Image (tube, rainbow, N blue to C red; front, side):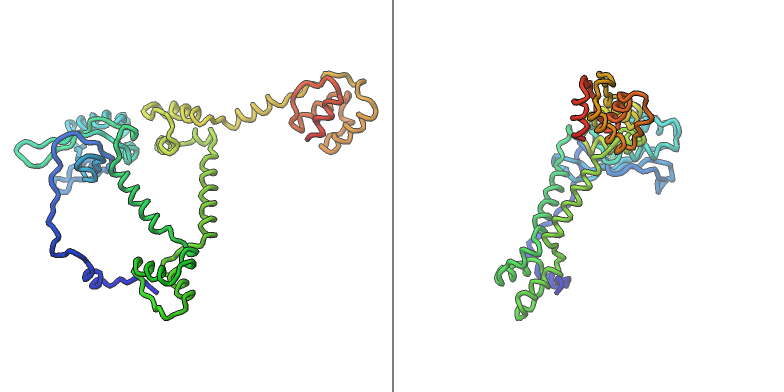
Length: 350
């Protein structure tokens, strides 16, 4: 049971071969475009060997959506570096103090969006590409990404048939499904055997497996949400940028890295472990407002039993109220207690 992979048969099955029109890519017209930066690499030009930064971009919308643009910035002359420094500034990045840091700066620009100008070169049909400014994803009409998402959704819909769906099919439905997926079947076989063969050939998942995968994804999402302030403070700028994009945080990424960390922590409402411990310590405050003589023999017996269960030795305390305060804080009980009966009631709840 396998898919028909014969190239000759696939070619023979193509409809409208003779009527296929001839098309060619037109040059991208001069003008303003919104692009996504796909790559930014440092290399040596093949012809001259000069050191340069090579950019690859995808036009995101308009008549040329999906088309590629390329740009090369020279680094081996002061004049070329000056223009490149201006490019980085327009894209919201500072000139690195050390040239060895440039690859990290370029890596941060990958997958970001920008506005560019395309201009024709003098005495040539080729074009130059110039960066105008960085763009937030909210300011860009993502026609290309929307198309890709639609295709992915369509693929997911096509693949959404499960093993249980196949087992529920009648023979006529099964034949149509097999044909649609390019499967050759011996229809004289037992129907259940045919279904098992199709399920195996298409690697269809069982409903239980899909549920398990869904649960695993939910668990993974929950794990991703369990982020602490200390973890944010340990992040690099690249990691912070990815987090801001993933969580859609309102954070200015052009600020200094320490300011970005503070903003991210505030946006997520996080506290450092030290702050959380301090908060917990501040919250657990028990005030015993009654005297030791207010604790009668019966109450004292009950409190003593509770203290021993909490590994507290009543003999270590000169005053029973001191023991009660420590006992209450051991159980995380806060508040003012004017009567021993009220404290006993709170302890019993624990």
